[in-house]
Image 1 (cartoon, one colour):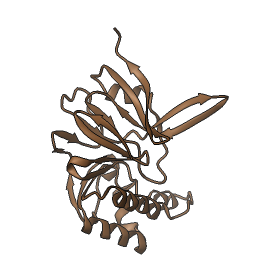
Image 2 (cartoon, rainbow, N blue to C red; image 1 turned 180 degrees about the vertical axis):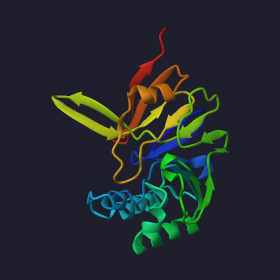
Image 3 (tube, rainbow, N blue to C red; image 1 turned 60 degrees about the vertical axis):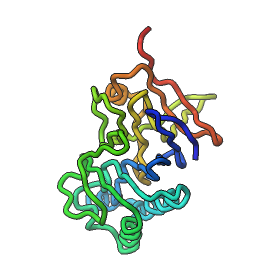
Image 4 (cartoon, rainbow, N blue to C red; image 1 turned 90 degrees about the vertical axis):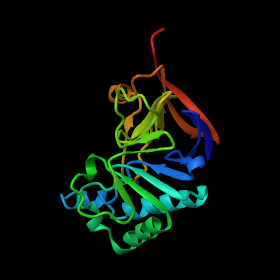
Length: 225
């Protein structure tokens, strides 16, 4: 885990994809997109049907590492509204065990519209916890400290003739967008204008990710002097 400060709170990046909030004993993850493979299979694009199992194993490992007591899932939890109904028995059992053992809150996202069933936990459009707003998509103009997901940010840089892409968080003074946690989620360039616009107002916007046990902050945008 890599520690850093956000909006006066101590936070820790966990494996570069999750956020642990020690004061709240809370693990925050965004964009699980459970059952994405089965969604594509139903539309004729066959993918290995183990993405939910991989995502939940990764999530269980992060819970063990942090000893979190609470999980906030920041939207796009399933890839579509019927995703929870397609969970194979092993993955369904893993998810049920996690939601029974933890204080679990599902924040709804655009992919969660019309969800027919949710596996344990509480459901909310957004909440405020410890003075931080937790929602799926950053809202430009929000004056309170905010944690969100939605954009699947990845730091994309070219070095020595190679193009490197890594999941990252995007942070300003008052906003933090988490990377996608799910196994089949892909990502958007962290410097994309849509992400930078969603982070406003800001004085500075950085990509943040762990690198050899330390926090790497890569400048994405600076306000004009």
